[in-house]
Image (cartoon, rainbow, N blue to C red):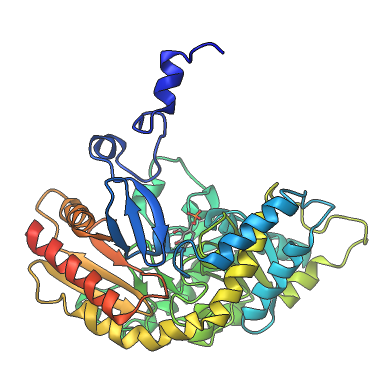
Length: 447
Ligand SMILES: Cc1ncc(COP(=O)(O)O)c(C=O)c1O
């Protein structure tokens, strides 16, 4: 064998950070001072410099069962050895059907059919496409408008950024989908600061949908999409009564309601889905992330029976929905989903999150008196902590808190000027105490 070229050798070196263009990361700053994770176990990550740090974010809101859980790891290994891949178009494999029926069984009401994708972004695009197609196949092809919400995050596909409401994620990408409008954000610091759970103030903001209907006419609107709790823009729970009002207005005008539960799905708010917590059944519900505890990419959309049935009308040999992905219901992802759902059930992890919610809320609210804390919101096992930005340096201070927490032993997430926390649902009181303590130290250190 000839010796590898210098370039090939360099590519093998673990410290060659150049080639990977990192997502949602300041690449040059990261590569100058990297934070590399090399292992995981339960509630902890292991860093490349040999430290154990608490995972305060379930990875990226996905590892709800904790890390490297034996039954999930075993299921993935077994599946890889048995069937690595099978095409989901015109063929199937048993684990896909099992995963779908297990997911459907957890969803409320008649949400009973699952379309698989590979990420939250694809789940959202799938949901939006199903909504538009549904209006078409039921003879309402004039209903083409999609309504999102300011400060909404629905991933990074063109559909998701069009209905999403984060200017930084939209402004570089042209005109996006046409015919989209947005509800106002439900967040108002003056009226809601330091709320545990759902804010009392804000249900009336759902009435803005009436204004939007008045502007465009219901006959042009296909669907409304919202996160029951906006996660990525800082943990913004729906105000009390808000989702119920949205549901009522959608029913009144024949508009489909989509809940984006990519973050809230699988126990984050103490229930399988936030829809259950709020007693509101959407027409389509998206999921991803925690469906298999973040182990293998998977996402999807669950639809209500009447939506599915509307497509099952034409000739039986015809494809009812021209949509799908090569890796829809990938065998490894499906096997991991079944194993993760078993674990959630056997360990009562959704109930555990519900029971821990008051302890969690009290612990995180304990940060209130620290310097520069503008607001704290808690719900389920999630929290958003707003940190006063330095003048002219939006996001900088919160970023420094994230780095200081990492150095002191905890992974926390930063979005703009908010620190977000969302530990695995296996978290215990002692770990909550340690996590909040480390964060408090980091906030004090950054000053
Ligand atoms: C509500 C919501 N929708 C969609 C997405 C996109 O998911 P993904 O990053 O898997 O594409 C996210 C990701 O955080 C999300 O929070």
